[in-house]
Structure formats: structure tokens, C-alpha cells
Length: 269
Image 1 (cartoon, rainbow, N blue to C red):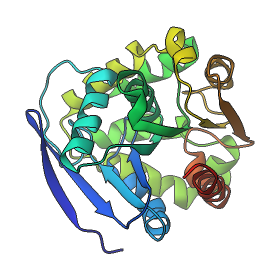
Image 2: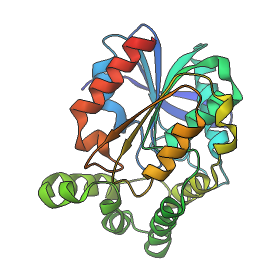
Image 3: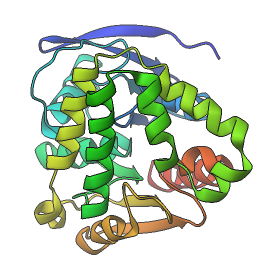
Image 4: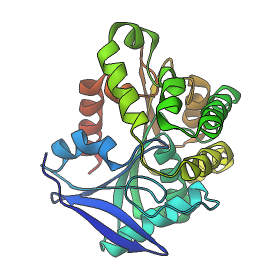
């Protein structure tokens, strides 16, 4: 797929981004692992009807990497700054995992700029299981300081048992993807901590935008407990559960995910 990748100056950082298509604006925010490439399949579809923005968060991909404290609110300000640079007043925001936490912070900081949200395998607050899983993955990287070892210790957290057992080649591809990280381990460690400290649960009632929450039924990171907290706290929410799928349900059941996302955007854009 052919995408034009550029860099935007946002505060003290240079954020790598793509800007594809025209129409209502959709901003895609990736999760703790990976970079904007996590969205390329969706960009290829959505750019036919929308102006689609995807980017590398600071500390990820090819954006500026600095070992410094960071919060999900900081990443939200970066995203709003990127929108300013691109002269985007309002957008529909789609976030995966940590990206969904960032989307919530955007809506709290600048509610008029977020038209709707799609939160994929995300959380307002991690439950004890999710916190432990993230802590264990952070520890594995700190102990080994090797992305391939980190991937080997982590990959089973992202897919369902059936997918892991029945799709060994695809699991190996995911492991290679995670193990091929080039970012500074310190940046992942900082953002892992940001996820553990993220807590918008007391503020969810302030978010009146329409929200689609999607979750994998067997996700240990963003469990059905954490998903339920989102559903109970958001005033205007619809929840879709992917049975027999986990944190990477977008890869496990891509057709259903794309259909739900496309239908949502048609309805709200």
C-alpha cells in the first residue's frame, strides 16, 4: 500500500503521520505497542470516504523518542497539537488500547473537538489483572532489554487460546512484529507506566459524545471488567463484544471489526 508519510512539529517533538483521503476527519491512535502501521489496513479502506490521520505517538515508531515521564493526557495534547498543525477543528477519534485512553483525555481536554469515539480493547482504568499483565510485560523488557525476548514473553496476552493454538503462523507473525520494535525500551517503559496510572473513570459522565466500545471477551489486559466500567460510566455508549477473541481482536476477527467501524462512521459522520 502506498502512503505518504510526513513529519509534523508538535511542541518539542516531531510526529510522523499520514494524511489520506478527504471528507469527515477520522484520527486513529495506536496502542502501547507498535506505531501507525497498526492501522494501515483500516486506512486503506477508510480513505475512500474520509480524511484519515494516523501517526506515531511520541516515543514510538519514527516520532521523537525521549526517556522522560509521560501521561495519557500528554499524548492527548500531542494529538490535539497535530490536529492544530493540520488545521483540523473536529474529528472522529478511534483508539486502540492506550490509544483509547488518549482519546478519552482528548475529549476531556477539548470536548468540542471530538465528534465521536471508538474505543478498541481500551480502558478508563485497568483492573488488577490488566495492571498485573502490563507490569509483567514491563518487567520482562526491563530484565532482558531485548524486544524479541519481550515478544516471546508477551504474545500470549494478545490473542485468544484458540487463535494461539490453531494459527501458529499468524501468532509467529505477531511475535515478529512485536519483537521487531526499534523504539527505545525506556519509552515503552514510560508509556506502560502511563497506562497503569491512567484513570478517567470518575470523569466518564462528562463525555457526552457517542462512543462505540469494542472488546475481546478473553482479553486479560482490558478485561470484561474494565469494559464494563466503560459501559457503565459513559452516558452515550454502545458496546460490542468479540467472543473467543482477545486484545488483538482487530487481527483475530478483522472483517467484523471493519464492518462495525465502517457502519459506525456512516452513522455518525
